[in-house]
Length: 469
Ligand code: PXG
Image (cartoon, rainbow, N blue to C red; front, side):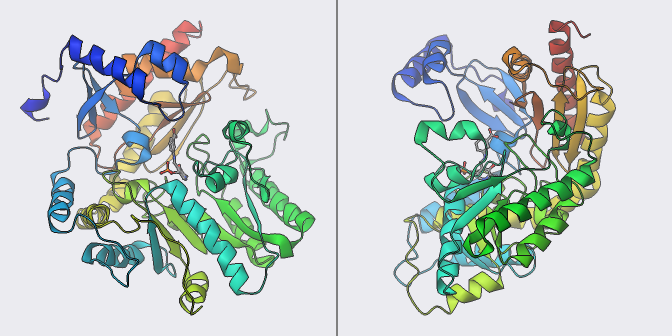
């Protein structure tokens, strides 16, 4: 850490002023505006490596890489310089008027190189939600081009998170996202997801994970048959549920799911917004689980979060249909393939390639992280399960390990644990009572030790509060 980050406090009065102004003028995402304004926000002023600093001079280790996105960590000079150079050379131009720019062309080319085979045509947008919205529109367009005009229904999974636009929120299976906005829209249907740890509590008995994977694929098939395959356009899935609670697919799941999609000619949309760019130890979760998407969406780690940019990759089937349709594709954003965002994403991918960062997650830091998190926490009295892959880990805090019984949600165990984390200089996310980690992929071994040491300390603290330690 450089010396200029040592003293970061901006003073009590400035912090107080920012808290007041934020409460007066700024409405926060996914927050209770009333209680947040009463409590006051924490103002993050800068960040370096895996550390965040707030206006009161506190340092926190960021176990979440922001929102699962800062792959290369904070303060990367090369990314900042790439953005700065593009800001000076070409701060903006669009792709509408038969024009392109070098950054976006090179980015699309490099992406096509690292994407699973066959995904070679790419559109750009600005967020994961927009990418998913775009993917659904292109799926509709594809079926319309094929003359299959009844194929309109989009199936996705319970507990899925695909974003917040009208379509992306409709695609999401986290039910609290819907009632405020009268969603989901018509034509969005959900099927069960293979959450083995929660299967018992959900009344699915004692199936093995592999049995559960096949069961969920059967449920997809039954749903397609119930709706009529001629009415089903697509099935959407994250390779691993992110915001739904870091749920990893059983080995049986994706082979069976892909067979069902093929059998009924249902397009497979894979949402790699969290699982892309080295997170699982491969470039994409689709590599990890041997998935062949028709359309893949990505965002977050594409630019390490340094710029808002997302992408939609099409396989030959969809890409060729659109490329040979010989009519205008009536879709696109002012900022599709923004030069500055493209330049930063391009540099981000170049660095990942040059420094072998994906292989580092697979062969070095990923296995170390997985081993350490299990060694430290697997036998903890409050921990029912530790699961993970690459640089993703979930720690289930449970009432009874033997019966996989969850705590009463009213006890807010996860949130209380997260509060201990903040107080102790650690950002660890709570999803229900599952504690989640997804640090920058550049994290060092020593920083992994620090991160997990703090995580253990905070889980000890909540265990003590509950009289379990
Ligand atoms: N798909 C997936 C799989 C995501 O995780 C989106 C789409 C939407 O991306 P945008 O860029 O529109 O936000 C996401 C976003 C959390 C959290 O608390 C997760 C996300 C966003 C905000 C919070 O876990 N994921």
